[in-house]
Amino acid sequence: MKIFILKNLGILEYLGIFIIAKWLFFTIVLCIYVNHIIRSAMDFLSIVDNLMVSIRMIFLFLSSFSFYFRVIFVIVFSYCVIIFFNFFLC
Image (cartoon, rainbow, N blue to C red; front, top):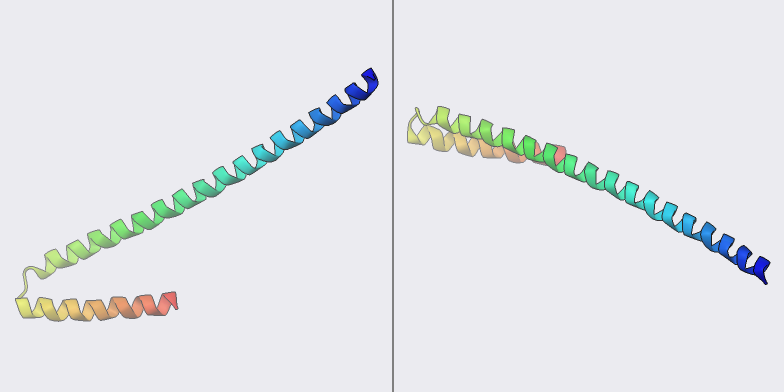
C-alpha cells in the first residue's frame, strides 16, 4: 500500500512540475508578446508625435503667407497625404 501511495505521489509531483513549467512558459511568452505590443505602440506614438511636430512647423511657416495661399497649400497637402497612405497601405 505504501509503495502505491509513493508511486501516486511521484506522478502527482511530476504532473505538478509539468503544470508549473507550462504556466511559466506561457507567462514568459505572454510577457514577451505584451512587451512587443507596448514597444510597437511606443514606436507608433513616436512617429505620430514627430509627424505632429512637422505639421505644426509647416503651419507656423505658412502663417507668414496670405490666407488663399494657405488654403491652397492645405488642400494640396491633404491630397498628397491621401495618395501617400493609399499607396503604402493598399
